[in-house]
Image (cartoon, rainbow, N blue to C red; front, side, top):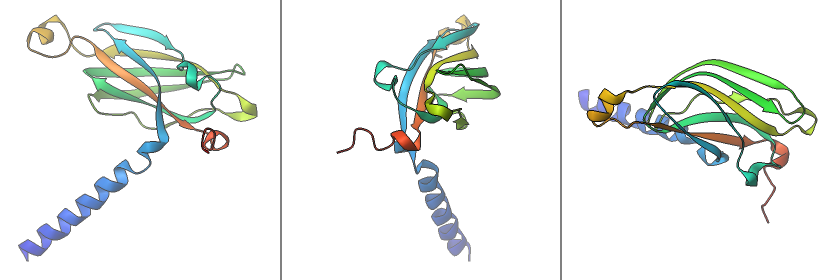
Length: 151
């Protein structure tokens, strides 16, 4: 009976792992930022290939170190803004939840303001922990832009 339970548990975990990564190919890196130990607010603009792209969602992925995301403000080309608070602490490899951004009337993502605190110090750097955290901003194209560039 224990063997059957182990097989069943393994199968459930395997399938849940596949579903957790389903759709990851829909996300594209639209910007990146290196953050230092202190609390800061930085503004990030989408990289030039994405200037004319409509996005429906964004998320933040930590690619190095640890960062505490306190607030993100999204600015759209039509002047609309949307704030997201308390996104939590992200370690290397972790992503924030998917954030639904305004995309009405053809508005495009203009810039993103990140308020964060990189978790670390000079003492942790001596212990081998990286001095700076690195984050990527990932975007999911809106339905009207998904087929652009496909032949």
